Length: 145
Ligand SMILES: [Zn+2]
Ligand SMILES: [Zn+2]
Image: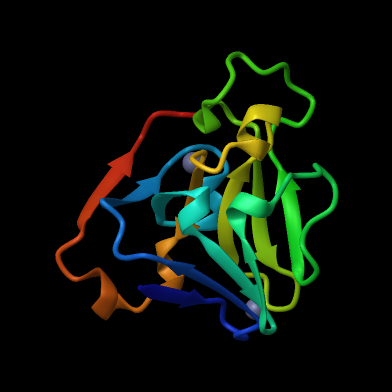
């Protein structure tokens, strides 16, 4: 079990273990966030905000309403989906702590992603302790998404 935390500690994300790899994504938005993603499935991700736990699998996502304590940036909200079920196509909600601003995770917002407990979630591994990430392969994704 690994628990990551934003800088102010209000938002914590718990996952079962280290990610398969870390991805320094160089797409248009992640590069600017400086995020380093680990990928999980929704049912394995628990979001705790000031003590209140929510499984990512229980988020039937509204595009404009984040959990209390988070702010959202929706990428490509006005673009037509080019496929279904592929978070990498860009219909993602980037979540950050509403207080300290740390990017915590992204979650897919297409209707099928919103209800699928096995849909992918990106968790920002920069909010994990380095000690929890020993030996995890670092990748750099240069593909523009
Ligand atoms: Zn915070
Ligand atoms: Zn990216």
